[in-house]
Image (cartoon, rainbow, N blue to C red; front, side, top):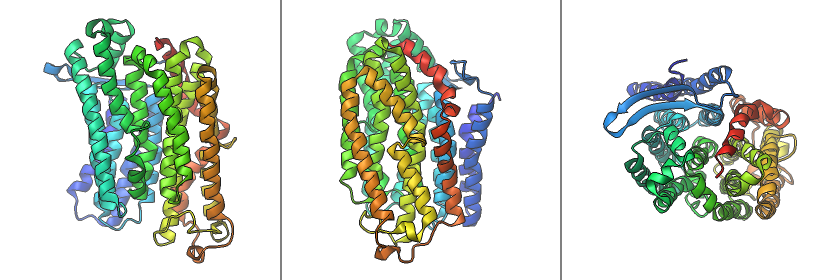
Length: 502
């Protein structure tokens, strides 16, 4: 167990290296090897879960070694309830995304190599506790994502890939400058040490309020682009829509959570006073993401862009909860705990439902020869009842139907936010209504009514496609009726977070 976290991060990279050094592997062998190395994350995460103590809110399975002594940089890893939840999510989404990409014909070895590299980088972001290695993992995730979009994406993939990189690297530059200033003032990059300095007031005393506010804005901008927070979202619809299905699943299921994770891991403990001061403006932006994201999705006829805008809407719930708690959570600790628990649970639940929806749209596109318009189908339920059943569960999970996983996270978010910022919760309900409208429209236009011309030879799911969907669909039901299975991992941690409220 001593090097469990390093093993979690570097096993996918070991698989990528093996594929890079064996160019003569057959496509089938490359796919099988990639899947096995990808599944290692789920196995190792299960091992961590079995030995994890949720009641201990400190980091567990920690690894810390001196790295660059002149810069006080250390290789520091740790696991708590938040990071374990996201490691489990990565372990679920990555193999299913690879299964969804099983039929890719153009250089499957390179595709698998890049995907494993992306998976390892994402795990590094969730486990690193020193800014230097954390930022390396953060930036390295952009490289494989760029090539996955550009080389295997749709007609507009080139522009979408470059837009994705320019936006995210631009935001990261501000964050790097902010942490460079932070290091110059206090001499450490370690998140644990910085959080302790912020908690006892030393960070503000050493840097000064105005300067610390500027540093906060730099970090905020880098994270806001990644989530993305409205209005930094404009790169997302094109990137998600043009990416191949497996990459879209990972982008929405895991990479969008990297930004929200940064808000909780960095902004929340290091800049509590600044976050509290900015909370009204940030809450308004989160509400805009919820409402405008839903209405933008409602206006789409391209199903993939519809799901992409829906992702902006759903991830904004997590940010709304965080900002509402930062603004007034001290006055209502019970509501603050509910909102933060809902935010973490929503991160996991959205990863399941959004990745499943992107896979379902990918099936529609493949079966119809590239069509994915809202009006291109009709009557799919008659031609493919198994597919309709699975896709229907994913749609109603995303809608927040009671009994499925999406309901629990959204309920906790709104239960908490109504007690903290009633105006924000009330306006955000418009997003709920719009979400119900466009998802039910999706369901009605695609699966019901007379069969469209593209559906006459529509085949139902094969064994591989069923195997891809079954794990996520099963979890939608399990977490819908037994959310405590996951909530118990992070609930003590979330309760402790409220202590950091300014």
